[in-house]
Length: 180
Image (cartoon, rainbow, N blue to C red; front, side, top):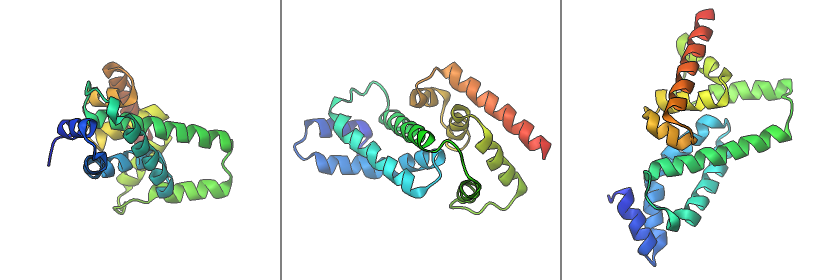
């Protein structure tokens, strides 16, 4: 399969953009979805946001200058779209009812793999309690194994800021888990 850079050049120079775009989409679709899914709880919401991301990528790909990796660029778009969605959600509901909280806990506890150990459950609970930036940095670093430079690019922060957010997240998670 062609590299991202080769595909982007083909897209920018091609009359048949759909074929090339489909290759990029297939290559990155799953990773983009899972990045979004970690930030929102509902599958349907993650799907909707992912569609918005791919529409934005289609509209802006002709202007992509390859100053950063394509994956960093697209994850940045996904991050921003997800934040926009979360901000709209926050404005629409100022308080969670007990029913909403029950649904939140049930959905966030579900995953493709069953969580069977107390440590996994405690880790998930601790991650849910982190401030948004720390939670996202922690998940990108811990679960996806991204380097701080890539995390900084995705989140629009400095490498030092990404490291600080990760360090604070780890401290808070350790403190939470020790209480159990």
